[in-house]
Length: 139
Length: 111
Image (cartoon, rainbow over all chains, first blue to last red; front, top):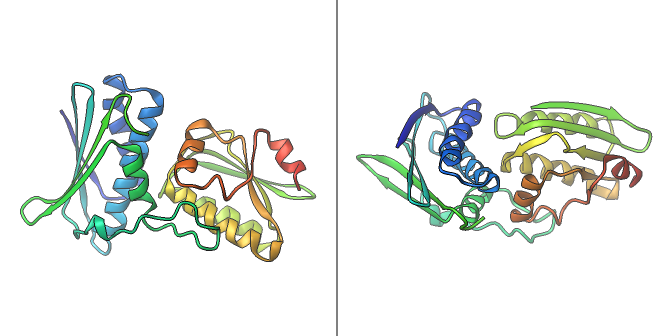
C-alpha cells in the first residue's frame, strides 16, 4: 500500500493525480482507466478542499492507494466538515444551457468513473471517502 | 497550463495547453472574460494540446457559453477535443452544449 499526505490546496491536485496514477500504472490499468481514476481523485480532492475545509486553514488530505487482485482502492481521509452525499442532488446532465447547474457534477463524475464510491464520517477518524476501480469495469 | 489567444476577423481563438483543474481553471475563465469583456462573443477553444480537464474546467466553459450565447450574439465552439476529455464531457452531458470540430481552421470557418 502507498500512503501520502497532501496539504488541502488546489495547487496539489497535479501531485495527487500523479500519486494515484502511479499506483494504477504499476497495476496495469489502461490509459483510459488511469484517466478516469485521476479525474475521480481530482474531483474528490476538489470537493474536500472546497467544502470539507471551507473556511478552515491548514487542512490535510491523507490518501492510501492499494491494489488487491484486479481492484484499485483509494482511501481519502480528511478532518474537515462532514457532509451527507445523499443530500447532493444528481445533476441533470440533459438540461438546457440556461438550466444547467454545475453543483454536484464532481460527485456525479466520481460515481460514473469508479465502480464503487463510499463515504463515511466518524467523529474519531474524520471523513473517509473510498473509491474503487476494477480493471475492465465502469467508466 | 498555458493559454494563448488569437484574434481573427470573425472570431477569437483560445488555445489551451496542458491541464485544467481547480487550480488553473480561473485562468481559463479570465481568458474567456477578457474576450467577452471586449464585446466579442464568437470563440473557438482549441483543445489540441489539452491533456486534462476536470469539472472545474467544465464550469468555466459553461459560464463562458452562457455569456456568449446570450441574445444570440455568439457561442463558444470546441476544436480538436482529445479523446479522454471528450469522454468526460460526454459523461457530464456537455457535448450537447457545445459544437465540436475536428479541426481548428474548420471551427474558425464556422463563424
